[in-house]
Length: 190
View 1 (cartoon, rainbow, N blue to C red):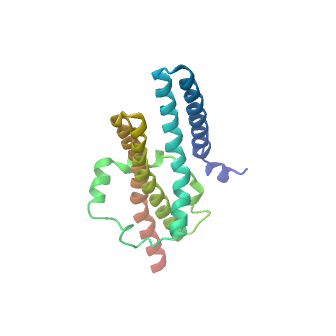
View 2: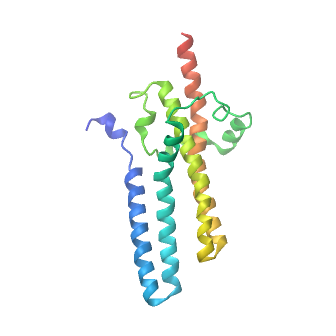
């Protein structure tokens, strides 16, 4: 493996798969133990593990759903993807420039200028944004678990935290994409 390709590998995929697997196994194990012992803490452990697995699972499903809908082809100038007037002041307030480089990427190669044209990178940014927006929405479907298990507030807090995490990735894409588009426009004008 050369030095450039090693920089483009991300541990995110393995971590997500591991959390999904461990969460599913933990849910099954604690669920089976709860069925035998009827101890409340075992049910809490089963539900917690199940929620981890669920939130990771939607992170694997969302790209499939978005790709099926969009064909992974986007118009970076569409109304949805164009920057809004209120975004720049918000990003300044949030100091996005200071922390954006520390946010992990599932597939850093999708944003590599050595592997893709600027147009492809901008398109990939739109795709990543759409995926994270869908994940944020799907995070709230976990509220349905409150129906059989109760404790709506716990499921709401979990959904809000999961959605907030994905909103961080949306912010990074929306912060970076206008810069890529401007660079594309400058190169096209030459």
